[in-house]
Image (cartoon, rainbow, N blue to C red; front, side):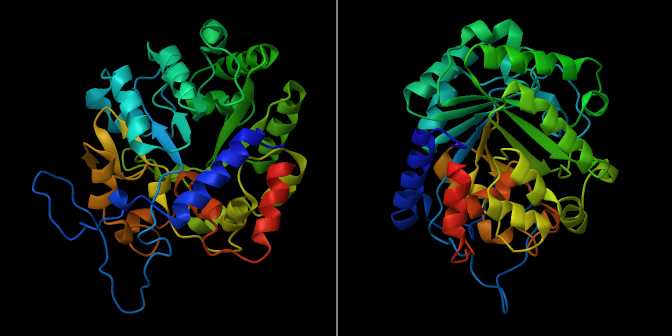
Length: 368
């Protein structure tokens, strides 16, 4: 199976329950109220003629919590907005209690622990253990450089994945992260984690200069280490990263990913076939950024992982004070070229704009 049975069954049950009985406290619409404490300006278009309501209106619930205990990192990756956007608070970190409160408050079944480099967080072993104790599945997103050194702090669990970022083979990856030797150390970390019985997947960002043949080469190379899966997503330009030249337009993405189905046949991609169809331009998906909320040292980041118009003290505040209808392609110019999985994979998982055959495709994909 592509994922552990417990994860597949748990997610399916969670989505089914919440889709038909979404928590009422997260469905209130206060988007028309102004917040004098919010210094950010939301750029949006008004609901009007020819613009239909979001298909999940009044049915919002989280699927994956993007938890950022800190933004400090040992690398300065070219496409990373976090170390730039949060430069003034780069030395701050969440307490263990804040992290656990966010997990409980949100209730998402999957927690992506990211950053920054989360393995620099002193309380990470305790955070992982407490999160597993709550029955959550964890993707520990890391550049891989500390895995070998700190592997003894963790125990293998079917709910825990080391998610190692690799943007190409050695020369390309080290160029992207702006340091030589990172690729080799990440590979050594993957080998050590697999030898110790851990589940490991990789995360790849595709930029304008990315050669998809090299991504094929990368996945083929990783096959020998029995990596459990690969996440792949087009890069998107954070407002904090001014180098537009490395990022992709929507048309670029369609062209870059036109052969993604062939990669999906050869390697265990963790992206759903519906999301891959979206990347190829063969179908449309609405943005469901509330499905992957982000919590960090400033609070709940609104509206999404990529755009910051506000920070909220509570998860309910994020869900009920964000004008969700004002975001997404066609509504906000900052969203026009975004096709990143954290905004659109929830739509695929929820079956929005689904076709009759999608259920069978998703089942076959999950069981492969």
